[in-house]
Length: 567
Image (cartoon, rainbow, N blue to C red; front, side):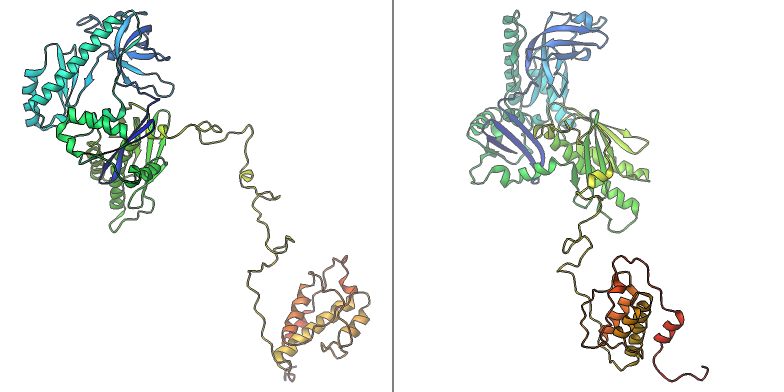
């Protein structure tokens, strides 16, 4: 256990094998009501709700249900029990807070007052005796014999788990101290009878409460950081449990206590919605108004041999152990629904449920696990006393008010969520010179150069012949075609341009793709490119050039040679 005090804030962490399993936090300015005893005044009684609203002086009325009424103190023992007969508006009633106010709900009250101690809980005006079920049978019998001798008449006690191995003198001292506290509470109730509501007994601060309820023989060390917390806990442990005093130590390192133990890092992960399992699976924890839902996923866990049923079962068993740790660490209360991965065999389902129950045995908070539903869901309840971990470290969002969504007055299109300022949301700006045509960027690889071929070879002659034919055909179809035929090529059809002619004409437009590609191929083979006529490249001309005849293309594609015998 590690206790860190910083100003008004006190944090307590419980670690098992260096893994954070429980966390408590409080501020001096925000006091908890749970455990306090008040003399309240009944404001109104609702028979239809079987509840009474009691003013305890905290601004908001607390609720006292019929099941929490002390019928013996009301004089209705053995009679018809109804809350309207036990309480009336304006009556004074001695109550104890059993649950702090949460959200819009007020505090929960009970008129069956109980005072917790180190080894037992003292219950005045009751003749009941209870012993923790976690103790073995031989220890339970020994404690029963001691209680018959030390418990006064008209009072009852509940033995806690920490009483295992306690001597009769230690139990007697606990009973006498708690009985003295009850006598003081009774005297204050009589003195302030006309001044209701009034506070009669207040629980100690968080550090003392946690050490009293949690710290026992199972802990190997209790480290305290903070002067005031150290003085308080040292005095309390030395007085109440002197046998545990050697396990109390003061933090003297230069680094922060929680940073040394990696508590802050684990707290940060505990505030996330998704929890990753060591094998690769994951948990998704979502809280609703009515319950908390835990979804189990395999994630990256694919198993190590076997079939799907074995893989799913191993993942569910690992998830059951982590779920219990998250319930304790986040202090999740109320109804909890766990959606394990579907398993076919009934034995595997029982194995996972049994593992979940075994891990819950470490949880000190009262809980109950129901049967698996027909949909394969595990339902359980856990007592909720105060705020959880997420509520202590968070506040509702001002924009979405805790919903996680921003609601608009009009429907939101999917394209509007992905828009980046362009006309089309999915379009990405082209790289290059900003022309919008996707120019090649500086980092793009340059196109591979075509190999330079022999100008006298058959391939080069065929390419030159095709280029010259295509240029001559286009020039003949345009105005000034005769001039183009004379300047662009020789009378015999070979593609040879005169060196005295300046290539000042603009390049051929994109629509003449076939001629341009053929000319480029010819230039790559070492043959000069024919000069196109300016008239044939008028920008307003949108007519597509006629394709060369199929007969001429076949002739141009054949290598030069003597005519065949068939021809």
